[in-house]
Image (cartoon, rainbow, N blue to C red; front, side):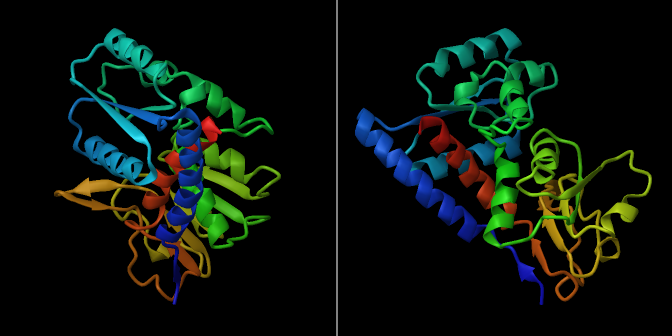
Length: 278
């Protein structure tokens, strides 16, 4: 029977450490740390994600400031909003995706790096390429915490990451190939001509594509680990990238959707906030 790599115990451990730091901060400063979240428009998934982050803030003793802007918000208006709330915030996120008329790269880089709790500014992503790692994007951090918690060996293992994103692929491919992890990392994407050739040799496969059940048992190496990060919505229902049929006695372990990486990602965000105020 494959081991199911549930995120809840990993999340619990992270929350315990973060809450202690937040309590010390509140005692020292006579106020709770503030995390500001900015949403633009009414994207249902974005609103759901931010509501989950808001709930976690209450559990951990963090003041959560949710700034809701209209779909038609201009880049200048968004810039002013970020500027206005930066000084009173210990952490800030701009929830992605943004409406198409807004330049994501430019908007993210408007967040001061010292309160960039998502770790997505050019400055903080750039630090991942030094030996001085600071803030790791929360989804990538969640995957690293899962690997650590379940004692999954990465040294000299073939690790394949599917997808291209600044949240998962860019950080993870660098970190997992670093001297700390020593993995043999490959990245595949929509232009990879034979993805099965890569995946079938993977000791650890991480999928962050966002297409429902696109990888099934035929892709995977027997005795490997599979981590499902992708999320897609079909007919009002959400799915991961992995078709889990017949995998229970085939893999060593898998992080499922839902219940795997997701819970740890939210806790990873607050773990980053704890680092920023420490």
